[in-house]
Length: 132
Image 1 (cartoon, helix red, strand yellow):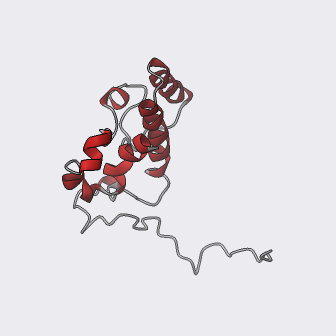
Image 2: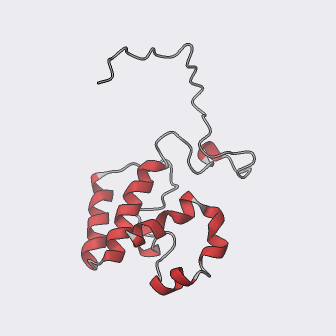
Image 3: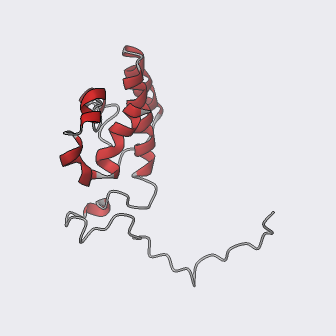
């Protein structure tokens, strides 16, 4: 779990990265913050922020092969974090603040900003179902 959390920290709370590497706990457990370059430089896997990429059977097999090459808690955490973040950055909630090429920083490209133009008044009505 430590390795999975360490892998996604730069994507979830990037503002803590300048100080996190100097913390005693981080230095004791020596996690890799972010993703292993062996993982992301593999053309079958690639960077998390390649928004055009799809989760194909080839990508899935490449992740399995990455883990099988050295089955360790570190690599298990890397694969779990990659899988989680791959779908998180594509879920439509703009969690990185950079979808559609926005490069103005968080001030001009806020994370979790709605860019779908959904209008709740004109949108789909919620079904009336009893809450049990």
